[in-house]
Length: 463
Image (cartoon, rainbow, N blue to C red; front, top):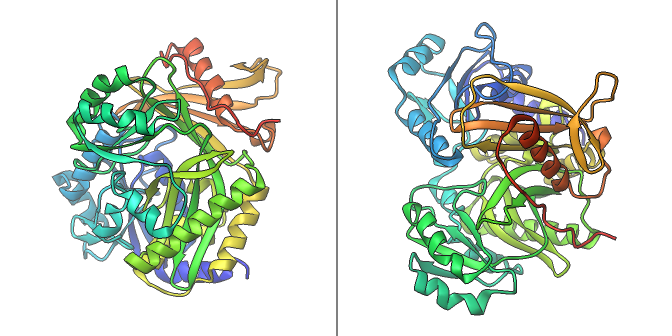
């Protein structure tokens, strides 16, 4: 089967309608809006989480509005944005009324954490019910792993009490310390926010202090040496589609009890046995989600691949941030749109055909990016072209072939640093994380970003 079946399914849902697209900053929403137009959308209005880094939308092409997404970190900022979606300011309501005076437009999200069922009286297309969202709470997920009968690391749930954490240390530590993941008392979190790595027991008090303002309890589990990665699955009415592993660039700050989220990529090829273990895990979890929760749509399992196997650490019961790396340019196989469609209309979608299409494309077209929100403000965007030499990135000279681009631009929660390599400049197979470390070190040298020393996870599968 080719893409025509999926194109027709999406065109029948999208065509001839007005759409309100949200869930990202304005700049990255623009290409998604253009895909909707290719599928026959009558018009698209963008509601962004700030302007974003990149070219702003042309109001004649896409009317738009940027909500306030400022906060102490990226999750706090996104929660503020979601609050604005639930209770839109008057200016946004008036702009939507001009765009959609008869209130027939549908809302479509690229990404949300909290349940958002519509904006200003317009219904969200493919909104997930709250019980599915609750599956993402990091202190609940072990019950799902158990129900799916998949291998997992030991863990315990403890209150925000350092004595309880201390008592759990000896039974969990495998020599590299423990990881604490906060509950979702104040809402779901991701991107490394709400997760801390404690290498020694004397880091417990500071970690309790850091996580107490956002949670009542945490899941403690051993720190797992291996490569951070994720695997995407798709629950359809007629079965499960499972895609290829994706490397998650989760870097380490050697001097601090925290991780540094740095991006994602598909350049890495895990050992065949590891890739198959990840795909088996995703298939079992997808089957369990369908059986126990009547779940539909995309999901993501994050975890660590070690020589001992793949160990899941969390579930994203939604479209994952790395899913676009697997997608074709053809809007017919825009997976976030398809995910919303199967939640909205529980129709057969030929999972094996979809799986084969995505696997073939993602095997032949590798992609990756680095990015992080930094805790300071910038007023103007900076850009630099880079070449890689002697394990370092440096600014490209006028006559050199550019191997990567890096930008630092405004963001409501700080500044956003982005790193985009030319895929042709990278080898297929090795992890991407060391390149992100090198790029962020270049940002410190060139722009004084103050990120500091970062380390990539050692590759246990290196020759």
